[in-house]
Image (cartoon, rainbow, N blue to C red; front, top):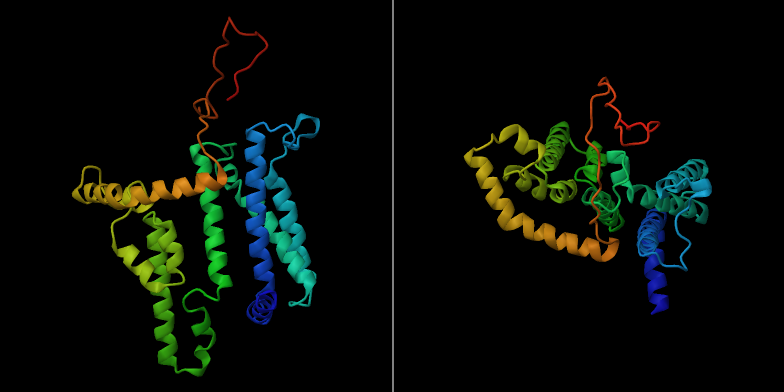
Amino acid sequence: MGAWLGANFSSYVVGSGRLPLFCFFVAFVAGFLFIRLSVRLIRARVRWWPGNVAPGGLHIHHVVFGVAFMLLGGVAALLITDRTGVPIAIAAALFGLGAALVLDEFALILHLRDVYWTEQGRTSVDAVFAAIGLTGLLLLGMRPFGWLELQHAGVSGAGMRAALVGLVLVNLAGAVVSLLKGKIWTGLAGVFIPAISVVAALRLAVPGSPWARWRYPEGSRVLAAAVRRDTRLRRPLIRAKIRVQELIAGRHDLVLDIPPQRRPDAPDPAPDPAADPVARVAP
C-alpha cells in the first residue's frame, strides 16, 4: 500500500510539477485546522493551553504571524531557482500556512473590527473554504476555462483564436455576473466549468446582493420571486453549510455592543455629570 501511494505521489504530484501546490494546500488546511482548534480552546478557557499571544498586554492577532509567514515564503519562492526541489516546497508550505492565518481573520481585515466570533466572522470561514476549494481544483489538474486552450491557440487559425477568446470572455462575464448576484460558489466554480457560470448568471439574484439592489426595485414582482426562490432553495443549503462550518470552526454567536457611528466633523457629546469628569467618549 505504501509503495503504491509513493509511486502515485511521485508520478501524479511530483512528476507533474504540482509539489509546491500540494505543499501549499496541505499547509493551508493544517494551519486553518490548528488555529481554529487553538482559538476554540482559548474561548473554552482550557487551562493547559497557552492562550493568546499578548506581550505587555497587547493582543497580537494571528493575522500578523500570517503576514510574516507569507512574506517569508513568498520572497523565498522568488529567490529559489529550482522549481521542483525541496526548498521551493518548503517555501510554498510557509506561504500556505501564512495564507491560512490571514484568511482566518479575513473578517477583521474587511470590517477593521474584531468580529471573529460574531455573525460577521463567518466571512472568514467562507473565504477559507473558497480558497480550499479553488486550490483543490487546481491540484486535481483543473485550470480556468481557456487557460490551456489560449496557450495552444498559436497553432490554430486567426478565426479559431478569436472564437476562443470570445468564449473565454463570455465565461468570465458569466462568472462576474454570478458573483454580483450573490452566488459566490457557483461564480467561482464557473471559472473552471463554463456552463455553471452561464446558468447562474441567467437565474434570479440572491436578495440583498449587489445585482438585486441595482435591478430589483422594492415591491417588484421579480424581487418577490427572488425572495421565494431564496427561501425555498438557497436557505436550506446555507443552513447545512453553517452546520458544517460550525462543526469545524466553532459557533459564531457573539454579539458585540458597538456604539453608533457619528460624523468625523460632529462635536464631541456633552460630558455625563455622573461619569468620571476626566473620561471622554470615544468617537
